[in-house]
Amino acid sequence: MGFLVWFILALAATTLLSTCTLALSEDGKTLLEIKGAFNDSRSFLKNWRASDFNPCNWTGISCHPDDQRVSSINLPYMQLGGILSPSISKLSRLRRLALHQNSLHGSIPTEIVNCTELRALYLRANYLQGSIPPELGNLSHLTILDLSSNSLKGSIPSSIGHLTHLRFLNLSTNFFSGEIPNFGVLGTFGKKSFIGNLDLCGKQVKKPCLSSLGFPAVLPNADTDEPPVPTKRFPHFLNGILIGAMSAMGLALVLLLAFLWICLLSKKERVAKKYTEVNKQTDQDSGTKLITFHGDLPYSSCELIEKLESLGEEDVLGSGGFGTVYKMVMNDGSIFAVKRIDHRREGSDKIFERELEILGSIKHINLVNLRGYCRLPTVKLLIYDYVTLGSLDHFLHEYRQEKQPLNWNSRLRIALGSARGLAYLHHDCCPRIVHRDIKSSNILLDENLEPHVSDFGLAELLVDEDDHVTTVVAGTFGYLAPEYLQSGRATEKSDVYSFGVLLLELVTGKRPTDASFVKRGLNIVGWMNTLVRERRLEDVVDGRCSDADMETVEVVLDIAARCTDANPDARPSMSEVLQILEEEVMSPCPSEFYESHSDCS
Image 1 (cartoon, helix red, strand yellow):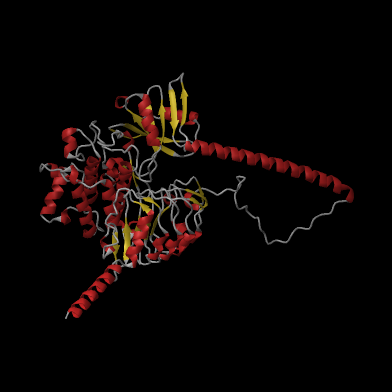
Image 2 (cartoon, rainbow, N blue to C red; image 1 turned 120 degrees about the vertical axis):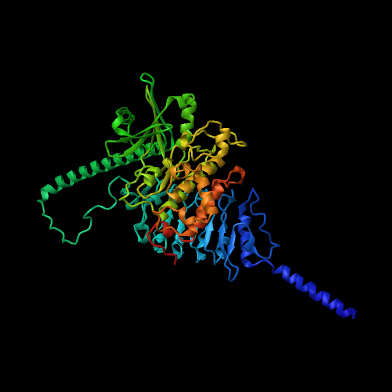
């Protein structure tokens, strides 16, 4: 009897030990290897434990329901450092890898090509170096590739053109160089996929590629199938003269080419230096001062000042709380927006100009680019990029009815891009920036309906890292958070409230102070809450959005409700808002927002 009990206990212990040993799946072990290469300073991955039975419950991890293999790693905005481990290759059923807005360095591991089912690869806004592995062209299911805002360099591999399912490509704001291959799907993406790479050229960025001497890389008629023309023989006594003349011409040509080469190098050095510095020019006698940021205004100070001084009433685009906006057309046809600043709204010139230098260093695809600042004797002017279609407010509420209104997919793209720009201000700028006046008239649309947040540079910059508040009241009625109206203290959470109102404006097609609900004593938030309680969602959606599907409408309304919560502490951060939009709205099939049809195959 005793032997039997001993045997049962031994068998149970052996079984328990075996179970513990085999508790973690191979994918779980791989995730721990990946975690080991990260620097998780904030302990966001503390629940990634070897003792767990199922890694599918770990932070940021999703699995296939059939076999519990890892299908998604979603860890944006986690402040992760370190590198992306080559062990990622062992996750052969991985479909989504989202590590954007972290602090990863090192190179993109070529072993990632073994993740053959990968659909979405988000690595933007890290510190990744090296080049794009050509092997990425073998990821045949890839539909999203976002490597923007890193330190990647080298040429763009033509193998990317093999990705026939690719619907979204963003390689902007890196250090890529050379000609963009016009091969396969690479030929279908435009300038916005490559902007911010100074040394890229090609059809996509509308910049011709030049040889090292500045001539076209391919000379016309360089090759011909015509037979050579017979040469005419000269008398022997002329041969010496001919050879001498040809030698002299050859020497002159060599000297000319050497001179051109030196000039080109000098020009390149000047351009590179100009690009990395803030260019300041001051005329003490006239009181004129011109500052250009990054050297990306290819005009002399005389040209710019002459144009700025000639702006008049006929050039006015509009006016707002911070001043009048003018349209400035240069002699080469380039267009810029110039904002005339009201003197009353500034502190000292020195402080104001220092803040502008910080703003001039901010580059993001969804923020309006500040190009320069000019102080004339009687006025101060900011020079911005001109955004073609004007404001969302105009496009949404005042566009002529006979023209195509904004469809649902376009509105989702505008919401997503605006969230990216605002999240960048809140989480990636140093010091962080509270906008204080998020509204549809401060969302500008380019020709592709890509949104660009404007006027952020005129908000107070945050300097108190613990409090992050400013007490200067600004903003527009209807968009302002209740606590901001009461206390005058603007925080990131008051911006989040304004963004929630913007979402409701996109869904409903109504301004926040529309007469239809103001006469009932409501704003757009109260009106929306009433209709949701009464389950009248169909009355919320703009009637012009015939393509709206209720599933995504409910997601957007849920985000808007969380953003406009009366309790600021209950509102999500903009990074969380962006994450939800990317997960629930854009993924897994981004093609819906870039083409008229959906293809998720």
